[in-house]
Length: 332
Image 1 (tube, helix red, strand yellow):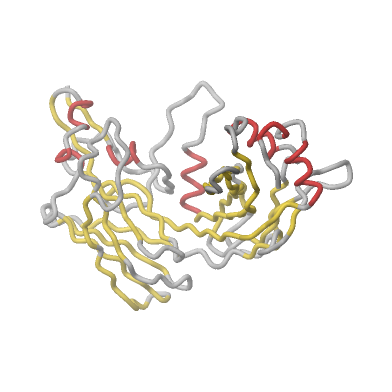
Image 2 (tube, rainbow, N blue to C red; image 1 turned 90 degrees about the vertical axis):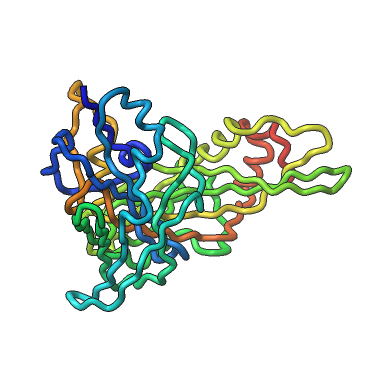
């Protein structure tokens, strides 16, 4: 029996798509798999390009063979084209890198993590087209994405003091305006703290992330007010679940909060919808891709971090003396 395995789709963390007319079970010997999310905030942009493979025998054994999932250096020519409307304004070649970023071990071959890299400065007002030329087959694989414009965060602001302890009249709510070309959003709060050895004065900086579910805007036009309310006990419960009482001569000191807001393009939003947990007995889902002559996702993302947020006295008192965290050794 022939075994078909879509390696890159199995190893990538997040995808999006909008087409379902590609038969992944057809007898193709070379199917290009693409994963790429462009973010103008990044100083380096990586595109993961693999291939599906088919062969006789055990698919799990084939998955561990690098040649089964990776193209050779001479096989592909990859570039990003930048457009202002329909006018080509720049072309950025992508360089093949090997193990520049380590790959997690697992089922699929991890001895060579091959990524295609550009250090181009991306313009949020431009459209980008990924062009992959397969030099062995003559096939051209393409996809396009707009960029996400600036995300306007209205609450909190940099250097703000926040009270996350709620009552019947108050609940802290993060707020922002939706960004142009984005549809799906999420937020993460990083609680930073130091562990201080009171004998040696050694300070170790640590942090714990509080992650929130995705939300959506009603469209991709931008300017819509979106809000994420905070559970008043959420941070303290998170700390209680992840920390134990400190060791001898160790005290903990808060070092502020960072709110990071994330935005994703419409294709990414579609993929998350399609590939989310099913609440029915029907588990089989359609294949989605926005890659022409291939499979996978090429879309956009954006992030903005609000820094130097401190806890208001009421929240700090709950951290030091509250029922969830009083035993965790925080002194300030």
